[in-house]
Image 1 (cartoon, rainbow, N blue to C red):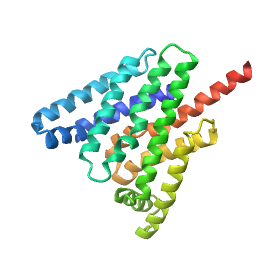
Image 2: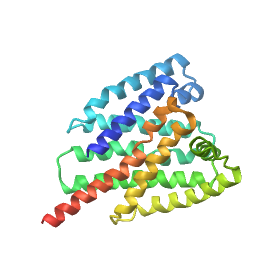
Image 3: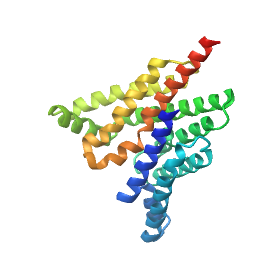
Image 4: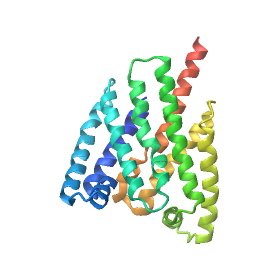
Length: 250
């Protein structure tokens, strides 16, 4: 469970840093869509940022479910705000963010009194979060999101000095999209495929790090915000291993 606590704490830090450094979707939504004054919208985001930072120590406290629900509520609100301002297939945004706002709820379930029902609820919240995120990202890849093509071309040049042509990037993105949709759907099947969880963890952390590879170290908040994409399936793997040991002991 420490993996999930650590990931949620990093998500809080990354989200707070983004709000303080250059703002987030809530600011844009309140200012541009609801005609709030920029100063009022900024104040709300600053308050949220400091609130998220204040939540970090409590994430590591066992009965942390009230704080975790507040964190999940803000992350969900941010996902909804993104939906309302995103011009490119906005309907995918809440699904793509699912691992972020469901991870604190899964941790809340695990933080309550230990019983099989809470563990089962946490497991399915984790499954739903990572499954939805991978499926949404896979659909975005299949739709050839321009941002993803730029990530592939830029990362290929940064890491290997290879000038990946756009046609090649589109071909790679097609394969990535098909795999992401397939593995995202597979994790929702009620079977404990440890190899699948391990792959999701590896790919989730790798794609989260692409933000820094492509945009530079100064964009570390974007990577921290997405760390749950890899930490959630890794937590599933640890949960399954623990339950398997318990079953063998019995």
